[in-house]
Image 1: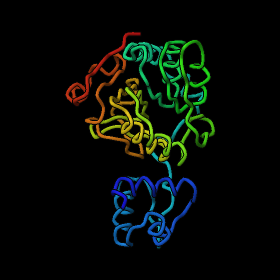
Image 2: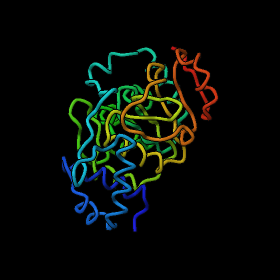
Image 3: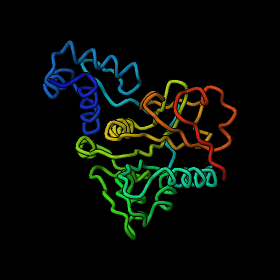
Length: 252
Protein backbone atom coordinates (compact mmCIF):
# COMPACT_ATOMS: atom_id res chain seq x y z
CA UNK A 1 0.00 0.00 0.00
CA UNK A 2 1.31 3.42 -0.96
CA UNK A 3 1.85 6.16 1.61
CA UNK A 4 -0.16 9.40 1.12
CA UNK A 5 2.81 11.32 -0.37
CA UNK A 6 3.59 8.40 -2.69
CA UNK A 7 -0.05 8.26 -3.84
CA UNK A 8 -0.11 11.97 -4.52
CA UNK A 9 3.15 11.84 -6.46
CA UNK A 10 1.71 8.98 -8.50
CA UNK A 11 -1.43 11.03 -9.20
CA UNK A 12 0.69 13.97 -10.42
CA UNK A 13 2.71 11.60 -12.60
CA UNK A 14 -0.50 10.25 -14.17
CA UNK A 15 -1.63 13.80 -14.83
CA UNK A 16 1.53 14.42 -16.83
CA UNK A 17 0.33 11.75 -19.28
CA UNK A 18 -3.41 12.51 -19.26
CA UNK A 19 -4.92 15.99 -19.30
CA UNK A 20 -7.87 14.76 -17.22
CA UNK A 21 -8.41 11.85 -14.83
CA UNK A 22 -11.56 10.36 -13.30
CA UNK A 23 -11.58 9.61 -9.59
CA UNK A 24 -12.35 5.94 -10.21
CA UNK A 25 -9.51 5.74 -12.73
CA UNK A 26 -7.10 7.16 -10.15
CA UNK A 27 -8.34 4.74 -7.46
CA UNK A 28 -7.68 1.80 -9.78
CA UNK A 29 -4.19 3.05 -10.63
CA UNK A 30 -3.01 3.71 -7.06
CA UNK A 31 -4.90 0.84 -5.41
CA UNK A 32 -6.83 2.97 -2.92
CA UNK A 33 -10.47 3.52 -2.04
CA UNK A 34 -12.52 6.32 -3.59
CA UNK A 35 -12.72 8.05 -0.20
CA UNK A 36 -8.92 7.99 0.17
CA UNK A 37 -8.41 9.29 -3.35
CA UNK A 38 -10.91 12.10 -2.81
CA UNK A 39 -8.95 13.22 0.26
CA UNK A 40 -5.74 13.20 -1.79
CA UNK A 41 -7.40 15.22 -4.56
CA UNK A 42 -8.71 17.74 -2.06
CA UNK A 43 -5.21 18.23 -0.64
CA UNK A 44 -3.63 18.53 -4.09
CA UNK A 45 -6.29 21.01 -5.11
CA UNK A 46 -5.77 23.12 -2.00
CA UNK A 47 -2.04 23.22 -2.77
CA UNK A 48 -2.79 24.42 -6.29
CA UNK A 49 -1.34 21.32 -7.96
CA UNK A 50 -4.55 20.12 -9.65
CA UNK A 51 -7.93 21.56 -10.64
CA UNK A 52 -11.04 19.66 -9.54
CA UNK A 53 -13.65 18.76 -12.16
CA UNK A 54 -16.93 16.89 -11.99
CA UNK A 55 -15.91 13.33 -11.18
CA UNK A 56 -12.14 13.89 -11.30
CA UNK A 57 -9.27 16.32 -11.84
CA UNK A 58 -7.40 18.12 -14.60
CA UNK A 59 -4.09 19.92 -14.85
CA UNK A 60 -4.02 23.19 -12.98
CA UNK A 61 -3.31 26.26 -15.08
CA UNK A 62 -0.09 28.10 -14.45
CA UNK A 63 -0.77 31.46 -12.86
CA UNK A 64 1.06 34.16 -11.00
CA UNK A 65 4.50 32.75 -11.68
CA UNK A 66 4.44 31.59 -15.27
CA UNK A 67 7.66 29.88 -16.28
CA UNK A 68 9.58 32.23 -18.61
CA UNK A 69 11.32 31.07 -21.77
CA UNK A 70 14.86 29.74 -21.39
CA UNK A 71 16.61 32.56 -23.25
CA UNK A 72 14.86 35.18 -21.15
CA UNK A 73 15.85 33.44 -17.92
CA UNK A 74 19.46 33.12 -19.03
CA UNK A 75 19.74 36.88 -19.53
CA UNK A 76 18.50 37.78 -16.05
CA UNK A 77 20.87 38.37 -13.11
CA UNK A 78 23.78 36.91 -15.08
CA UNK A 79 26.58 38.18 -12.83
CA UNK A 80 24.76 37.15 -9.66
CA UNK A 81 24.12 33.66 -11.03
CA UNK A 82 27.79 33.26 -11.92
CA UNK A 83 28.85 34.24 -8.40
CA UNK A 84 26.30 31.89 -6.82
CA UNK A 85 27.46 29.05 -9.08
CA UNK A 86 31.13 29.57 -8.23
CA UNK A 87 30.36 29.55 -4.51
CA UNK A 88 28.20 26.44 -4.87
CA UNK A 89 30.94 24.59 -6.74
CA UNK A 90 33.19 25.13 -3.72
CA UNK A 91 30.72 23.12 -1.64
CA UNK A 92 31.33 20.01 -3.78
CA UNK A 93 34.42 17.98 -2.79
CA UNK A 94 36.26 15.78 -5.26
CA UNK A 95 34.79 12.28 -5.35
CA UNK A 96 31.29 13.47 -4.45
CA UNK A 97 28.07 12.45 -6.17
CA UNK A 98 25.97 15.54 -6.86
CA UNK A 99 22.53 16.02 -8.40
CA UNK A 100 22.27 19.20 -10.47
CA UNK A 101 18.83 20.66 -10.95
CA UNK A 102 17.71 22.17 -14.25
CA UNK A 103 17.94 25.87 -15.05
CA UNK A 104 20.27 28.66 -16.07
CA UNK A 105 22.00 28.91 -12.69
CA UNK A 106 22.80 25.19 -12.87
CA UNK A 107 24.45 25.72 -16.24
CA UNK A 108 26.78 28.18 -14.56
CA UNK A 109 27.45 25.54 -11.90
CA UNK A 110 28.18 23.00 -14.63
CA UNK A 111 30.85 25.31 -16.07
CA UNK A 112 32.49 25.52 -12.65
CA UNK A 113 32.40 21.76 -12.03
CA UNK A 114 33.27 20.52 -15.54
CA UNK A 115 36.35 18.32 -15.60
CA UNK A 116 36.55 17.73 -11.85
CA UNK A 117 36.66 14.14 -10.48
CA UNK A 118 33.01 13.95 -9.38
CA UNK A 119 29.87 12.09 -10.43
CA UNK A 120 27.27 14.56 -11.69
CA UNK A 121 23.66 13.44 -12.03
CA UNK A 122 21.92 16.08 -14.09
CA UNK A 123 18.31 16.95 -14.87
CA UNK A 124 19.26 19.38 -17.63
CA UNK A 125 20.45 18.64 -21.19
CA UNK A 126 22.74 21.67 -21.72
CA UNK A 127 24.33 21.15 -18.29
CA UNK A 128 25.10 17.51 -19.17
CA UNK A 129 26.89 18.62 -22.34
CA UNK A 130 28.95 21.16 -20.40
CA UNK A 131 29.91 18.68 -17.66
CA UNK A 132 31.03 15.83 -19.92
CA UNK A 133 34.75 16.61 -20.03
CA UNK A 134 37.88 15.46 -18.21
CA UNK A 135 37.35 13.33 -15.12
CA UNK A 136 33.68 14.21 -14.59
CA UNK A 137 31.35 11.24 -14.86
CA UNK A 138 27.94 12.43 -16.06
CA UNK A 139 24.67 10.57 -15.57
CA UNK A 140 21.77 12.03 -17.56
CA UNK A 141 18.44 10.80 -16.22
CA UNK A 142 15.92 9.58 -18.75
CA UNK A 143 12.55 11.22 -19.19
CA UNK A 144 10.69 13.87 -21.14
CA UNK A 145 12.67 16.92 -22.28
CA UNK A 146 10.54 19.98 -21.69
CA UNK A 147 10.33 22.47 -24.55
CA UNK A 148 12.17 25.77 -24.06
CA UNK A 149 13.61 24.84 -20.64
CA UNK A 150 15.45 21.61 -21.60
CA UNK A 151 14.78 20.11 -18.18
CA UNK A 152 14.00 16.41 -17.85
CA UNK A 153 10.82 15.33 -16.07
CA UNK A 154 8.18 12.63 -16.02
CA UNK A 155 7.65 9.11 -14.65
CA UNK A 156 10.94 7.75 -16.01
CA UNK A 157 12.89 10.52 -14.30
CA UNK A 158 11.05 9.90 -11.06
CA UNK A 159 11.73 6.16 -11.21
CA UNK A 160 15.48 6.75 -11.63
CA UNK A 161 15.59 9.18 -8.70
CA UNK A 162 13.90 6.69 -6.37
CA UNK A 163 16.84 4.31 -6.90
CA UNK A 164 19.64 6.85 -6.46
CA UNK A 165 21.63 8.27 -3.57
CA UNK A 166 23.68 11.46 -3.81
CA UNK A 167 25.84 13.41 -1.40
CA UNK A 168 24.47 16.82 -2.43
CA UNK A 169 21.49 18.13 -4.40
CA UNK A 170 21.97 21.59 -5.89
CA UNK A 171 18.41 22.83 -6.26
CA UNK A 172 17.05 25.81 -8.15
CA UNK A 173 13.68 27.47 -7.62
CA UNK A 174 11.23 29.86 -9.23
CA UNK A 175 10.19 31.36 -5.89
CA UNK A 176 11.04 31.21 -2.18
CA UNK A 177 9.13 32.65 0.78
CA UNK A 178 8.60 31.87 4.48
CA UNK A 179 6.45 28.86 3.53
CA UNK A 180 9.23 27.31 1.48
CA UNK A 181 10.40 26.66 -2.06
CA UNK A 182 7.89 26.65 -4.93
CA UNK A 183 7.96 26.14 -8.67
CA UNK A 184 5.93 27.20 -11.68
CA UNK A 185 5.85 23.68 -13.14
CA UNK A 186 4.04 20.75 -11.55
CA UNK A 187 6.29 18.11 -13.10
CA UNK A 188 9.50 19.80 -11.99
CA UNK A 189 8.17 20.20 -8.45
CA UNK A 190 7.69 16.43 -8.17
CA UNK A 191 11.22 15.79 -9.49
CA UNK A 192 12.70 18.26 -7.01
CA UNK A 193 11.01 16.54 -4.07
CA UNK A 194 12.40 13.17 -5.15
CA UNK A 195 15.90 14.64 -5.59
CA UNK A 196 15.72 16.03 -2.04
CA UNK A 197 14.76 12.58 -0.74
CA UNK A 198 17.64 10.98 -2.68
CA UNK A 199 20.31 13.33 -1.29
CA UNK A 200 22.09 13.57 2.04
CA UNK A 201 22.19 17.36 1.75
CA UNK A 202 20.20 19.93 -0.23
CA UNK A 203 21.64 23.33 -1.18
CA UNK A 204 19.28 25.91 -2.66
CA UNK A 205 20.72 28.26 -5.28
CA UNK A 206 18.61 31.34 -5.98
CA UNK A 207 19.30 34.98 -6.78
CA UNK A 208 17.59 37.64 -4.67
CA UNK A 209 14.75 38.22 -7.16
CA UNK A 210 13.33 34.79 -6.28
CA UNK A 211 12.73 35.65 -2.62
CA UNK A 212 9.44 36.91 -1.25
CA UNK A 213 7.44 35.35 -4.08
CA UNK A 214 5.37 32.20 -4.33
CA UNK A 215 4.80 30.02 -7.39
CA UNK A 216 1.99 27.58 -8.03
CA UNK A 217 3.53 24.24 -7.09
CA UNK A 218 4.91 23.77 -3.58
CA UNK A 219 8.25 21.92 -3.50
CA UNK A 220 9.30 21.81 0.16
CA UNK A 221 9.47 23.80 3.39
CA UNK A 222 12.79 25.46 4.18
CA UNK A 223 13.56 22.97 6.95
CA UNK A 224 14.33 20.43 4.20
CA UNK A 225 17.13 22.68 2.91
CA UNK A 226 20.50 22.72 4.67
CA UNK A 227 22.05 25.72 2.94
CA UNK A 228 20.93 28.67 0.79
CA UNK A 229 23.41 30.37 -1.54
CA UNK A 230 22.21 33.71 -2.91
CA UNK A 231 23.59 37.17 -3.67
CA UNK A 232 23.94 40.33 -1.58
CA UNK A 233 20.55 41.58 -2.75
CA UNK A 234 18.93 39.19 -0.27
CA UNK A 235 20.89 40.54 2.70
CA UNK A 236 18.04 42.78 3.88
CA UNK A 237 15.46 40.00 4.31
CA UNK A 238 15.18 39.34 8.08
CA UNK A 239 12.96 36.27 7.67
CA UNK A 240 15.59 34.63 5.45
CA UNK A 241 18.30 34.93 8.09
CA UNK A 242 16.10 33.17 10.65
CA UNK A 243 14.59 30.60 8.29
CA UNK A 244 16.86 27.78 9.46
CA UNK A 245 19.23 26.90 6.58
CA UNK A 246 22.75 28.29 6.59
CA UNK A 247 22.70 31.49 4.51
CA UNK A 248 25.64 32.24 2.22
CA UNK A 249 25.88 35.50 0.26
CA UNK A 250 28.04 35.11 -2.82
CA UNK A 251 29.95 38.18 -3.95
CA UNK A 252 29.94 38.90 -7.70
